[in-house]
Length: 297
Image (cartoon, rainbow, N blue to C red):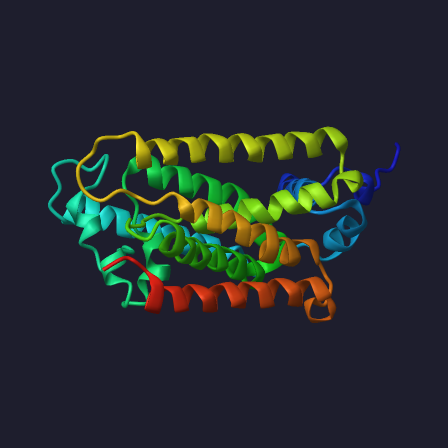
């Protein structure tokens, strides 16, 4: 009669279940790891030139998470809901008196209230306005923040918001301003310049697609902003479109420096100081203009 080695037999059912759970957990962990790796690899291809991708992938993680752009988006959405729901409105697809009387909106006759030069980004003129800004800043801002972290993205975004309101106060001084387009355009401007300068180090078809996509988005959005500014016959204050231009110019200077210096010391880059000095000169001139030269009341 043959002897049977108990150790060579299949495990008992309970043991098999334990083994399946262990191996299944390992496989699921590997799947999650592979998904995360693929996601980070895709982010690196979209956001970085080739010579920086390996370094990014070596230390890629979601800690800290892209908290800045998420918090800003939630704040903008909360303010929109407040004025759309709790403030009396005839309808909420396009908001009216509620936003113009808001202490957050930028108005030429209230420009001595300096916070308005930044706080106008939280107020939007309607559903289409806020949805467009939220989609763009989340789709572009979250990958940028995963790569460059919150400080850099926050500096670029806020520099675009401030540049937008200051440019509007100079070149379109009689009109009000609402919306986060200055910050959104700053992110797009920085990303656009990075794609242009590093075009040879990126996949050609992908580079062309990114550049054409940004040009198309900016063209459509600017066309709609110009239409609302000059061709509509709506009563009340007109919304300035100059913030778009100010935001994208901030992005193409300050944003380009931040987004093109991945893992490098900004303080040693002369381009950083040129952009910072130029931006400070612009801010000083805008403040002087608003105090002494502005035709606004």
